[in-house]
Image (cartoon, rainbow over all chains, first blue to last red; front, side, top):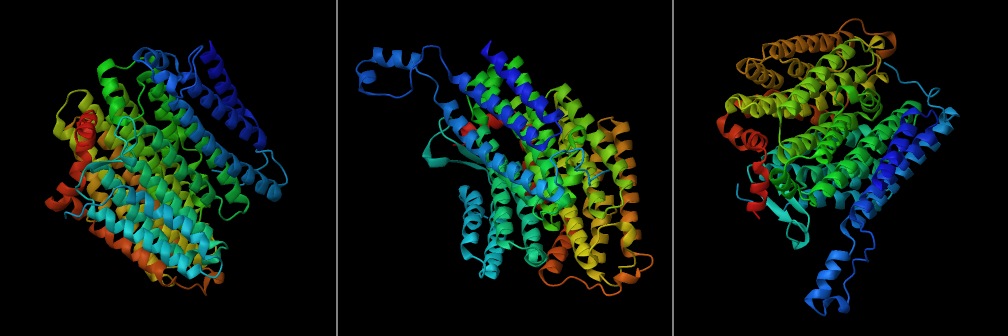
Length: 120
Length: 507
């Protein structure tokens, strides 16, 4: 069920990016898609009732406690991936917004149906 | 050649240079240009030394699958060579051409970041790392397309950026699905996991996402809408980089790696590649003939030429998947990859000559030019060589790769494919006769009486690429060169899933 909702969020973002005429709304749509994918990655590693994947002394006392830790801790790798992906999307968001601002200065509008000098 | 080049150097040199260049400030523009050129030339030398070698490197000594590894094999070194040849020429050309823009240091930084990203994509053996490098290269290219900050540039850059970002998100989604289904991020281990457990629905969906994502980056025909806007709007050396090598590295290379080496080729995927290739070839060629903007015409012809590459590779994959004769499959893939390298050289040369024409006349419209043959003799000569190559007139480079493709198609009994290849070549001939006719022949308009030939490094860059266009045929005809450069690259794709065993075995 959470995966379906996550996919729905992805489709909402895609719809927004493809259908909307306003440049800023397109950017928002792209970012919604990006967050949906990030959410998906986090969910991949999540376990219901899991604990943070940080080893402390208590976990190393015996083989039993360690095995329990391994079986109940959350997968940390997707979290690292999402951190990287967030930084990348921040960079691309900054660039997209600055291009939007420069375009607004030149054309005086955010409407992509009016920003059409390139054809063919 | 027994020089062992450490693999991270290919990423480190342009990255370090990119961040050193802004430090020179406004006064050190000459220094910055020299440094940037040194970086690209040293990459070219290193790429030549690394031909014919194959090895892996574990970043930070973390052994795979825990850590990230870099893999150099035949396909990687072929692409590294192509990237460094095109970037060396484009950088030489920019040394003079970019004087007409402000903020040259920022341009040089972004250029080198793009090279960093492409080298990283080619060397990476980890699928998430591939995505990160792909984003570095793409972000730098979005900024470079909008570098002029005029109406058209900004519009093109936004369009490119929206489609490029959607492609990147699709690829990231694919990576997430692959991780969810196999628990691995290293390409060799993913491939091993897929071989032992087979494809399930999640992995099929991931493969579809990869094909759409990389197809968007490569501008294959249903996904090509951004290319004819983005490539002409960029400054000429950047158009050369984008059309010459960026779409191939981020699109074709990554697609081949994922399909052939990770998921394994199947008959349906082979057919899909062939159909995409033919659509791109035909649609790109028809759309190009109708264009009156010089660079836009060349951009559409890039779509058409990318079609040849993917057709050759797809045809080879199809023959392998059907269990056909491996010799003809290798021949088709050889044709595709050789065409990739040839196209990198002559299309970047064509865009550089268009930059030279634009700098001299101040326009890109074919109707406003004419009779420039006497005013711009070197540009005319190099442009004619490049046009002859792209059309496929012997002995220039394009002829050999198209010949191989036709021979492979006929031998594998795909006669209609061979017919389409020849037909699209005729369309290409019409396109470039149009360029010759309207740019260089005919009446010289009044307002262009005073134009001057470009000078210095621009000419060096164009002549360098023109010489390569003439000599590229040797890559195929001299057995030693073919065995050390092209054959290992073909073998990476024909071996397919053996990739994982090779990588895991050679550490």
